[in-house]
Length: 133
Image 1: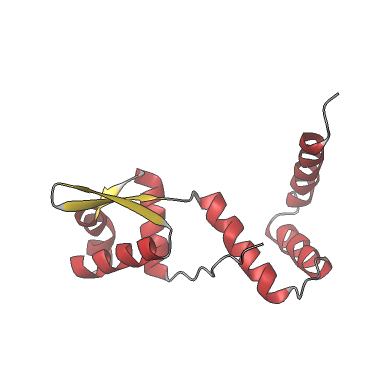
Image 2: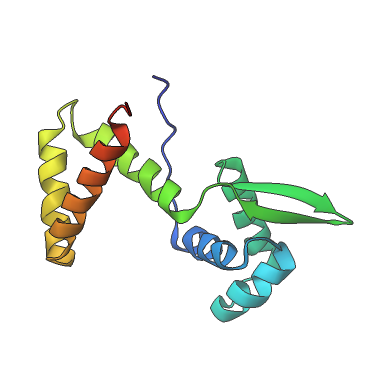
């Protein structure tokens, strides 16, 4: 299996991704008008951030007239999965038990009902993987 490159995101990168997930696509000026003006940062900073996200493989872009239009390559759930995989690979030392225990503990701390949700998700995954006669 080819190792997945590590994804590290700063607060501005996350804000830009959040915005693009909500609007589906935008150019640098549109992103700046929402995020840059709120934070008091320049258009150049937004352009650099979009470029970094593109270089990290998280955004695709196409040129329309003189501007690039950026589109998220991954949805939120897909990115979360890649980040979780990255952390698990870095810290699990090839053992899944500590990672699973930590995940279950975290899920329960966030919301006790998450344990029931996990049980339903596991059951649905098992059912989907069972061969159909």
